[in-house]
Length: 401
Ligand code: FEO
Image (cartoon, rainbow, N blue to C red; front, side):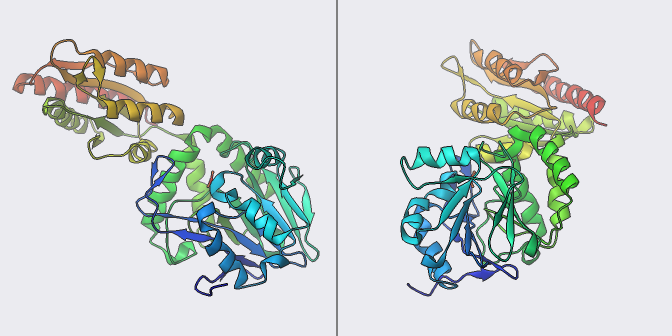
């Protein structure tokens, strides 16, 4: 084995043996300008236990890190907390090499792995609350269904006061550093929020319940180790509080305005609308879709109070980039937003109706008539757009606690 990838000691019995993906800029449609990591962990108990593995192309990096601690064939048990392929892509290869005595997963994890690798490897089910005997310590499991897959579960190593939280509390951020206190908190806040918005937002009610359950369990925690990004050891309370806050999706005085433009008229409207929102006490995020990817739009929506859409009409349709964004946002199920629609058009202006319908289908209340204008807006129209924006801000203010 080459020696250039080393494990990192995380706690008395646990090593990080994951992989750093410096290159990825797209994670199934989620922009990752800072790359990502696939975290896996080795518990050096009497029964040496591997918690999760990595995306298939990173198998050798991962195995090299394992080999910097022990011979991989000495791994006795494998735990799969989450069976999305960035954590199980090389599970079959690893199982063939290691020949563990057992692989364990949640009931749904067993099914998912069986669907990925028909016939093998054999996976045993562990149930919610069950503990796995590692010889001189135990690993306890907690199902976290739909956070964010049906199979998802947490594992808790009481011996090291360490919670393996799979995707939860993670982020896409490739770094040399492995711990939160070694990194810029503002970047961690942004990337953790981006991860929440793009991966976990649809399951916000379940996150609220999970937070309640974690509070009741009252686990002693020195470390929270997710499957992506840094391990939390300094600000565990902070990231848990942020999850509780984000899951509530309380409306704020922030308006998110994704827009596209053909000859600049819809852009002119958007600028005047932003001025009006400001007059009414709201702040705006104008997001030109010519240069804003869908994951960034979702991130902005996380702590917003209004979603205001602007599009011209092309061939009787909204702009394709807007259609992309709306398909994406609909799946994320944002809550507690109010909506508005605007745009310039040449002759028929179907986009306006399409955007209104899209907002309604997302459960977003459209609180005012659309601000639609034929061709190029003049000063009077731009003043109307400003007033239109101010009206939305006033409506936002009525809904903010
Ligand atoms: Fe990191 Fe849901 O996989």
